[in-house]
Image 1 (cartoon, rainbow, N blue to C red):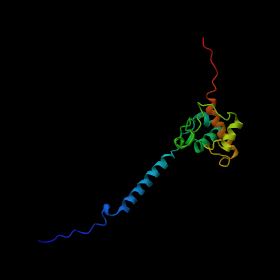
Image 2: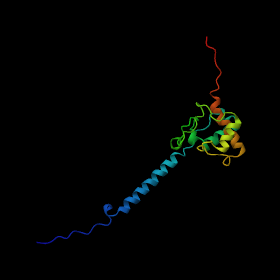
Image 3: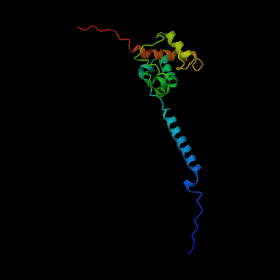
Length: 154
């Protein structure tokens, strides 16, 4: 009777080379990360006509879309894509009272120096004076939409 010797392991078989699995997983993570990164960089919608008509508001819209929308969201409701990962929920600029003031000086200070709790970053070095003024005007617009006059009911 002949004795059959087992064949040597196939070094190209996936189960024989765990480094292949590791490389495959790393490549999948890179592809997935790239897809997520580009997904977060979708261009913003064009500004509405009333924003386009005012050059300062139009500039504020651009700055808001570049610097603020990730946390505060398109409508300013604190529901941007990064809102879930912050330790404190970003301020809802539309429906909630503004804790540190709504006038131009107070909003400018918060945007320039950041939030007192350290969650909102300071944009004083990232924005020039014109950009700062423009984004403050644009952000205040969220709040002004709530300044409705009471109507008499008969």
